[in-house]
Length: 197
Image (cartoon, rainbow, N blue to C red):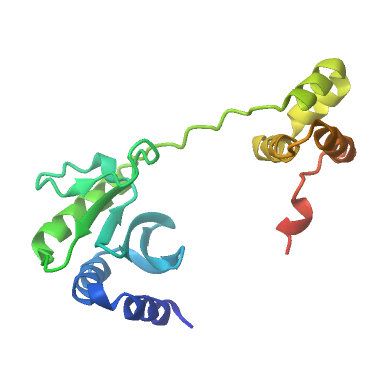
């Protein structure tokens, strides 16, 4: 199934929002954005970066701007759908009976594209590594092991810390630590064997 067919199937599943989603799709297709599918929804990219997407929900459908925080929002249409969670993402909601003002939507899309081209973007905050007590104690007592752990990428360090931390019993956390120690010393990630599949 090609991209267009996937999006047609998506729109078919969201018949309640057919008029709005089709109108939004036409506007986005008429821009310089490339149409694709991400997370199962119609998504529009520029130079491989997500700029906008459309989606249907129970109570509304929406046009998402992935760096929408930079939009002027002169018409007051944008909301942060996950306050406290998303920093850059903004959503324009359409409810039953709402008409899509093509000229207004085009102006928002054009501004979003211009912002993207100028390099405006919110960088993701690095996640702070939280070490379980057992792993922290081992790192403090074994400097060679600590160097090997610190040589891992932040993502691999987080995988190992989360793996140990997720065990409910101290006995299980220690058992997991024993099993992963040789992997850390070898410089491999916990889930590396699944990455090449």
